[in-house]
Length: 115
Image (cartoon, rainbow, N blue to C red; front, side, top):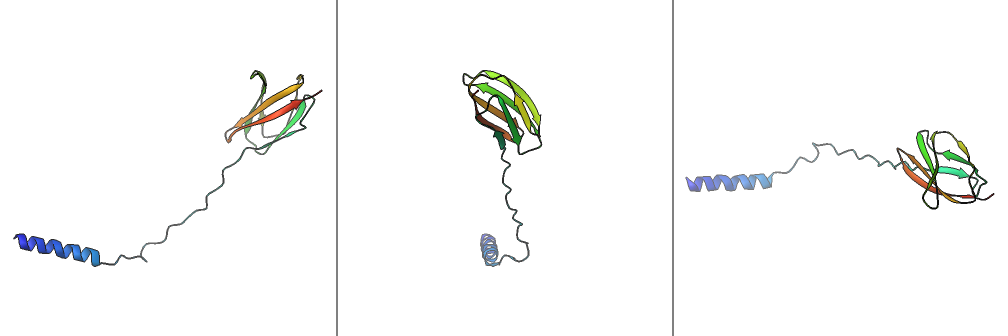
């Protein structure tokens, strides 16, 4: 009985490794080109400015704009909806950080106010 079981096992192993796999039966997988991620870019001009500058985003999504002074204090905040926003504020001379956030990410720019 043991010899018969051993011979069946041996023949099964030999048969398994001697079979050729059907390479042509299965279709090749479809490889999709990876899409590049969207990069949030805003055109801000003029810089340096006199307190009036323009933000021109490259998306039509809603964006939150926050302006900080160099001590980290929030000077103002507004929301733009994909259009060019002209910001007029009575800012004093100095360097400010402009943080623009949307669902695509966050972008920080430096604004110089020189009157």
